[in-house]
Image 1 (cartoon, one colour):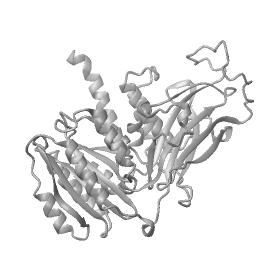
Image 2: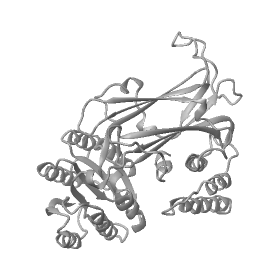
Image 3: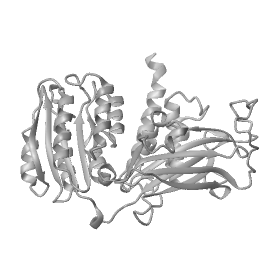
Image 4: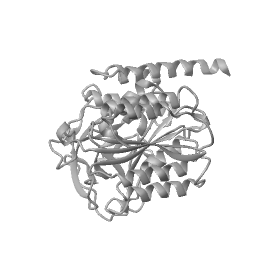
Length: 424
């Protein structure tokens, strides 16, 4: 769910300087699918450094050239995707290529982006064949990245259809290896290609353990989104180990649930523990989290009152405070976290869905649509038609057409839903 919601760009206010690497934008609106609850949106926007402050990059492309990569939507698309990435890099940035298929090898030693012809020639010579020695490829790629570290971005970019069948067979061992390597200052991003044997869960886990991000690329348009339009957020980390903790005022909120993020939930005691790893925020990156909250006294409550209050403290007065948001983060070169706190008050709440900003309404439409596809446990009679109507009214400028693409996807889902009884 969180991947679906965060796929789209949102026009949140950004911080004025790198001293505070991101800014939180909070708003509350009525829940579109439930009159008895409200929706709290926390939107984080990363600092956007000017070109003069853009860090130099040392990138190692770890490319899967196994036999399963022969399909047109795999290695051929991958080549064109990396051509696009080269147009987004600084001439002094360096790239290298490590391939793996049966055995791993270096196809291109670290080369400045200004030597584009040499890099493109190495890409053009790649061909698919053999089994998948993914683990050995990862070892070589990290070794190459560590040997040519720069004061800036050092990253391995794994491009694969997700099939690791030779090398480190145990998934946990592979994730532990990636986690250890992030301590050297080299992060890992994952780009997935093709269908069939693609292991999304493994790719996401590797990226999370490697202080990076994962993206799935099935068209050249999607490659442009990830590697051109969002390249700064993909490559340049401005804050690491970012954690969000929300405390709701029991006098104002009886129940709450976070929509999505099931694989990213931390234990409460881990929030203040700087040794616990968390997510990264890239330059200009936006992160959106939605909480569905049930006001105290609402008839929409799903859980009974507790017989024994664990805190032993009386509820806070409702006054004007609804929640208290705490955010911890570390600067890229630091091991000590900094705390940001944001009280959420009645002033952050709007009385109607129509009064909410377009980004909040669109995110709600996407969240509602996703929940309907997952069975509609919380959305009741709310339908795909309702999601389409809400999203259409919140489309906004839509410079790259992503929101319009969502509407087309929702309409296709509606058609597929209508055809289901016919197939039965």
